[in-house]
Amino acid sequence: MTLIETSFILEVFLASEIFIFEGWDVTQFLAQNANGQKGTAMHYNEKTIFLKNGTECTLRNPRESEAVQFTAHLRRVAGETHFLARYEEEVVTPSERQAQIIREALECDDRMLLAVWINDRPIGSIGVNRVSPHIKMRHRAQFGISIERAYWNIGLGTILIKEALEAAREMGCEQVELGVYSDNERARALYRKLGFEEWGVVRNAYRLKGGAYCDEIMMGRSL
Ligand SMILES: CC(C)(COP(=O)(O)OP(=O)(O)OC[C@H]1O[C@@H](n2cnc3c(N)ncnc32)[C@H](O)[C@@H]1OP(=O)(O)O)[C@@H](O)C(=O)NCCC(=O)NCCS
Image (cartoon, rainbow, N blue to C red; front, side, top):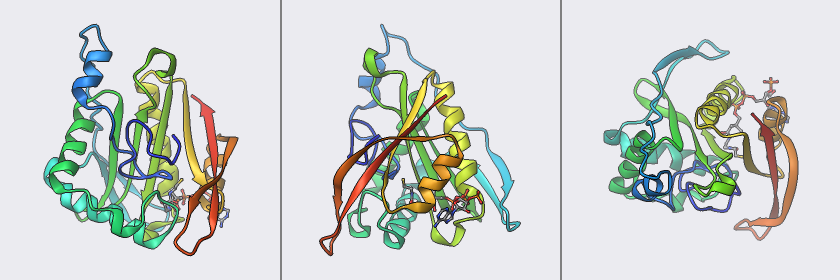
């Protein structure tokens, strides 16, 4: 997905902000997917994992009742780095809207939203969705990832992206795409490690507050 908020997600992450799912609504998806067929929801079976530094955390879908905490997590990361689509003060999703995003991710088989919890507090998240419901683009998925700085470099990004790739396979997609700031060396190295290649560049995709421009590197890999 381009960091630009494309049809679906991207309300949440991006430059991988997670996407979430602005654009179509579930009803629309069901109508297009269909011929009336309703897909299976993308529920994630809760998992306990241990990070490289021994930290124990839980991977599970956020719940509607956790909408405020989830938005707060996205806001924290947006305040720690310029590598997401929004500045901190732009992460102002109303709780009802965030709850709707979470609910739709649970109900719809074209997207998955997964968060990492430590003591019931979200510290990382990843969203994956189909790029478009249209027949010509249904084989393409995109994702956005967001981890709080205190948990960088201990393997969480690797774990979350592998889960997203699996979810995209479950959706029947054939490739996964993303956009990343050209100066996000950590993310680019991680994506390369996980088999992504650079497919293109959007020049001056981001203009930061100080006036500097950043290119967006488009990356992708087959599933
Ligand atoms: C980018 C991000 C998802 C990476 O997650 P993470 O949990 O730190 O990733 P991991 O620990 O699994 O892996 C990071 C890898 O990058 C490497 N790395 C770290 N800093 C690096 C740098 N400056 N240059 C190159 N590689 C670097 C690490 O050594 C590690 O590689 P290894 O697994 O071979 O040791 C996370 O830092 C993040 O959410 N950042 C803020 C938001 C963001 O940038 N999102 C991505 C938008 S496209």
